[in-house]
Length: 501
Image (cartoon, rainbow, N blue to C red):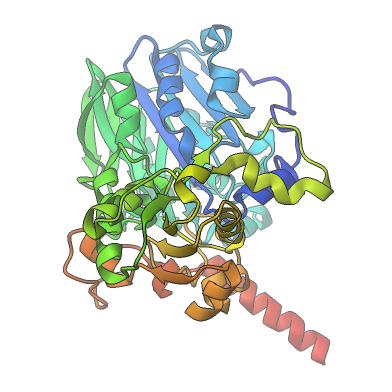
């Protein structure tokens, strides 16, 4: 196994860009991760690097590729963006082979350390095994504690490593059966790509919460989190991996295994609202068209008298277009985003830190001044960025500012791979609608309803008995057991009882 050198990477060993990045992104939902796999291509690592570029929006903290050349595995894992490492031909040259798996990471579990960068690799008795994971295990911490008590030696702080140990401990004869054995132990959300010395394996959790697609590029097969990664390499979309499906690709072709009892799929609604790239097709739906439809339904539900519709870039753009089309109010770019502000920009001193949002977003005064504007964004989390944007619009001369959110109020945290704050940090969990409006300083505030989201998805309404999507952030309806969360609450209660006695 060849290991990447240097633990510092682009961001050092700390938690990224610190307060500066928190100021710009603390009020946004943070992306999860993206996975990519390729089998039977002479330039597998280069193809994986290009695919990861297309998935960069799903994680900007770290990137890694593990390749296999028929004799040995090679690994390059670094902190930073895909282009920071894999645009260098010398790095790709260190990843020979016709099969590779790749991963872009935003850490929802585990710190931003090189040892947590995926794909993770281990030498098992059956040979080398590399794995990349998009999602979050809701019993990962519980399993990890049990494994450590039983003598396991862990190298990372990620829940993904639990899967490595479970595969290693299975006594099944065939590798695919050992892999399935491990899946039977885990709970939560996952899309996995794994590489052995003979196979590329993909798997999706029984509810299909996280996405995974199969593509073909000539004689090569591709696995990816989104179809945009197929498009960028010129691959043909074959199909979505089904919920609860394990797909095995080797020299014999593609085999499908369905080890779990059939369940109704419940894909994550936030893939459509925020996470997936607009040009991706997720579950047979165009993400761009769905977001535009969300804006159209929002305009029907929450109209306002105004002169111009302004998106909060970039995530609010499709919904704002839809809102404009239905309302008949002109769409204008009243906010200009600076795409060149990133993690490497010099961190401002504390006395100018409040200006951070202006470095990322600037008012287009010629559009805003003297106008009644409707601001359209995709979601509202803490509300801190919304406060600054409303203030920016007023400073630019807006007469009225009406805020419209193309998703329902986020009232519950996520445990499936989305980095949401604790519930007491969610604005909608601590304020009523009027309280939120006053907090952000808008003249009016409205959210898309839960049924409105479902209408935009092509459903008549949400079926409370059998919800069609994973929508717990809006409804509190978590689709799986939250074993780690329940254990933490129980431990806290025991601790309080001990203190009381």
